[in-house]
Image 1 (cartoon, rainbow, N blue to C red):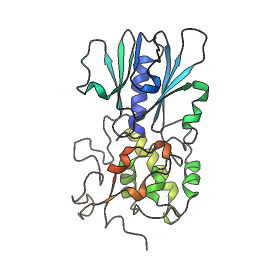
Image 2: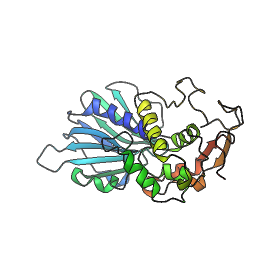
Image 3: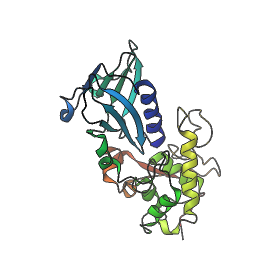
Image 4: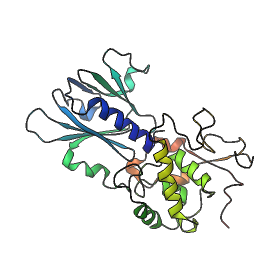
Length: 279
């Protein structure tokens, strides 16, 4: 389930391989963009905005700059290959976008959303987002202000609402609340130190933005990289209590433009002893 740090790394990889290079071919395998052809276009920049990825391009004539917007959803990914390199072993029907230059190929798999808009209008797709935890607009005070606007909302729901702060998904939500000892269904107004929670979120995502896999424990070994997420029924790393799991329907994000089918598969993980219910 890609979160803000994954999208950040993806944008960086696309930027390194494509920025300043001319596309030699393109193939968009979605109905609304099926006739689009970017052959001859130059990629100028690839950036992330929360869980959104923006690929900016210039046409070969004097036309306006355009942005190819994608949202990875639950299972989406971009992969960059060298010319002649074997592509990831996935069914062809999962491919949504193929972009080529003389040196590289970018393949977008299972992308949840795709849109093509003039670059000057791309804010229409991301303007609703709160401060980006990994972006130049990061503003902890603004994130705290936005979280506090709905004091009775559960903190688990509020953290995943991309309108409050952009980049947190289910993994980081569960892990951050464990690290702060906060019960996931605590109303925002009862969270003891909201600025400290926001500060921790920033530090954790910053620490992970260059890692190949998410780790909140400091270990990259499989099975040791999280405290509670994915560990239902296993002993808490702090106290030994069995990690609890609960369907996350009540914690679905308020930002419906970022809501995907992943909601049906989400569960909340927490330690009943370390994260006691608020009185």
